Amino acid sequence: MALRKTLNMKKRDRLTRIVLSHLGRMKGGLALAAVCTLGVVALDLLAPWPLKILFDHILLEKPLGSALSFLDGVLARGPLVALATLAAMIVLIALGKAAFLYFQVFQTSRIGYQLVFELRRELFQHLQGLSLSYHNRARAGDLLNRITSDTHNLRDTFTESALAFGTHLLTIVGMLVVMFALNWRLALIAAVTFPLLLVVLILFYARVKATMKKQRRREGKIAARLGEVFATVPLVRAFGRERYEIAQFETQSTKHLEEGIRALRLEAAAIRATEIISAFGLGATVFYGALQVLAERMTPGDLLVFSAYVSRMYSPIRQVAKLLLKFNKAAVSAERLREILNEEPEIPDRPDAIEAHDLKGEIRFDGISFGYGEGDKTLNDISFSIAPGQRLVLVGASGAGKSTLVNLLLRLYEPTSGAIFVDGHDIRDYRRESLRREIGIVLQDNVLFGASVRENIAYGKLHATPEEVEAAARAAHAHEFIAALPEGYDTLVGERGATLSGGQRQRIGLARALIKRPSILILDEPTSALDASSEALIQEVIERLQQGKTTILIAHHFRYIKHTDHVLVLKQGIIAEQGKARELMAMKGHYYDLYVHQESDARTRR
Image (cartoon, rainbow, N blue to C red; front, side, top):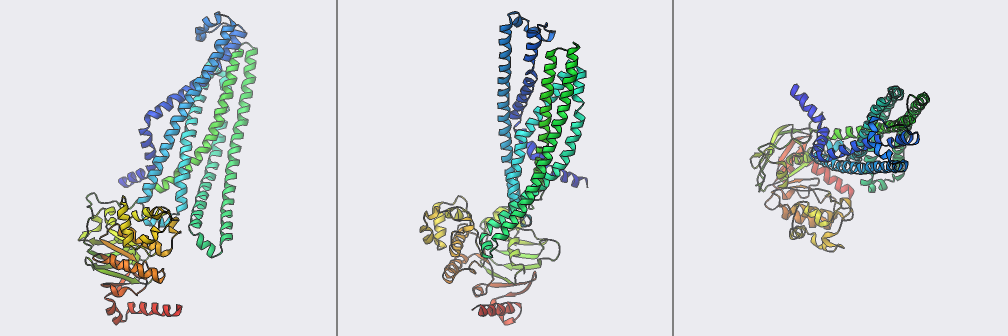
């Protein structure tokens, strides 16, 4: 129990550890920023003193105290020299403060941008390691919003808010120390409003944080919905749902607008409340201080310093109120990032995992069971073998478990029981990346990236040479149409290959599989949605692809099954039948029923 609690604590603290690790590497820059912050605060405290000297010791000709005795020589030279010196001091204080602020902002901004880079890299890397189950539950738009907008909020908080908060806090403390040293009664009057300010800020802080959390969730939902709509524009238009989607977007945006206005109203109320309380404190300080000057218990210069400090001190307090509201937004963003980082990644490779290389292609499923979630299992005690170079067909109704078997072989999921062996080794003994590198897959609807044709083909083998890309394209009968494109292999295709025909996308997908030279080939019937000419061309390529390779074909149609060595018929997660196609037809079992049903549907469509 103690170990589990420790692991959970480490998991929850992952975001904090990333931030602290980054800050640890930037400790030199942080130290310089801290020195600059102290310089800004010190010069802020010095700013009103030239005016005190002017009023008390030049205009009223009062003697200098022991603390200011170093100015005796300046005043002895006459008022003109003294005034020039005080003017120079005001300018030097302003220049010094500007220099400190410049380096302070530069350092913290640099560290903040680097922090965002680190966070985004960690988040993206972590998401790549999460299971398909997580990605199936998550919404792409919301994940994108978290990686971009939420990390941006943290950067703003670090580069602006945290720095300003520290500066304002040190300024308030420094001014209070000087004020109590000058006149503790007057300082006490100025400080008496602080508890009231604290209560107001705490009350508004809780309400604003709750509103900000709702607003960020709403932004995630809007981003997710936009991502879905943009990815399915043809479907939206085919069903005439433009007005419906616009209405949905307006509904979500209206709720986001209302929550944003509510947050702004609370923020404005908090700031106005601090201004009113500050005004009462400043008024009381000036009133009592003036009485002290009239009673000759303090000088006009002292009152001037006090008034300047109180006025400047309440300004940082008001700024702190604003910054606390920004911290709310950052806290909500941090929670959203923690939700991603707290997700458990895929089961990592074993420490002694071996490299999969030049596999023969012998595959054995031994007692495999698997379920995507709670409830019925998708696969139940599946066992079968494929010899090297053999061609196996998976047949079954939708949901029978065909794609699940392939996903388990690719280690996209881990079986709940049983084991899968390739060339006599449990696939968990292989490094996951090296195993997938040995497996080529051609999907029914190949997904292409919004990049060049060359980059899409080379995605199967990074750093492939132009000659290798062209050879793969020629083998897939894709070179001719690629060469006819405006920029040949450097032609950019639309997102998901939208600017190409179905047959062209499939041939590029085949080239992408060919360039890998895989030991095992998986085909999710990539010709089912093509016209007759494209289908015949791609089928010829597939026939050549299968030569000498262990091949698994997920069959949605039965017309090519006669060319295979073995048929596996799945029904509700179990093996219902297996054997050669003609043997299964003769049995007149589940395979026969599927075949007759499909032929009947084909005749009806004709």
